[in-house]
Image 1 (cartoon, rainbow, N blue to C red):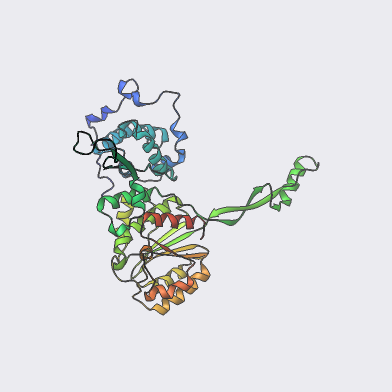
Image 2 (cartoon, rainbow, N blue to C red):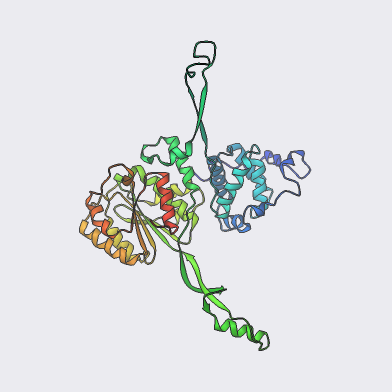
Length: 416
């Protein structure tokens, strides 16, 4: 889908006057003065940086509308055109203008407002979106009346109904993505876009003032001089912390076709969570860096860019050679390296074992994600997996939303 697929009205379109003016009664959707400011909902820098950084306004707003539709807000083609017409009369670099223009034009009812706020925070602010409310499915089961009383079926009364409620999202969480229908896969991708992905912290070389830690002699002396030589309290400092870098290597060979797209969408969620501390590569017959393509806010646009960037979809796998290339780039030093592959190695298996040994010495932690590990009775019998296993810190499944959530927990610093 092209970024401008929702369309823009031509210049001079008389329908642009449909945007409510300050005195128009239809503008009553704007909350009164006592309503919370949108700036309390979204960071001011988010919208202005998105528009001010040179991103095309139409691409950003149509991507925003697509994300809203995925979250259940009826932001259809006509409503998106209304948003673009409204923004032509406003300053799109101001968070207030974008927030209220979208809220007035894209939401159909009060039920849409919480979802709109959640998506606005995630899309423009770079924040982690809140958890989507699980859709509930009600299953009605008819049973016969208990013996000794009550009407039975066919005796003039309706049988009692036992209502059991099951969460469709919870059922979907444990399903293997390779066996999902198109509708289930679309819902799984929507939930992946809302994944909360924490990140393990590491100490940086920089310091910050602290109540405890190392004695900061310079700060103590400065405070004493500021007080005219009077004795001041001791000052301390501690290391600042930064998110530890994560490097993802995603196998896009033929044997990984049922899982590659979903794994790349997981990578998109991780890049959106920590864009400055995440690197993503595809692995097939060559190593391809995909980080820049995955930084786009809209998952559909990001996936289109990724599909154009990968030259070796559904080919073979030469993980040994690609790991050697990765180690040459020095991107893995001190990072958590995540390899998503089924271990079918077409190249030299001994080279894969040697490069995995080098990687385990260079990286902070090595996590191997194998989609087949989630299947009952799985054993790592492929030559590639046998060569890699001695050098892996965590060997986890990668076949379902629940498995991806466990991976996110690992990346947050919680180890089994």
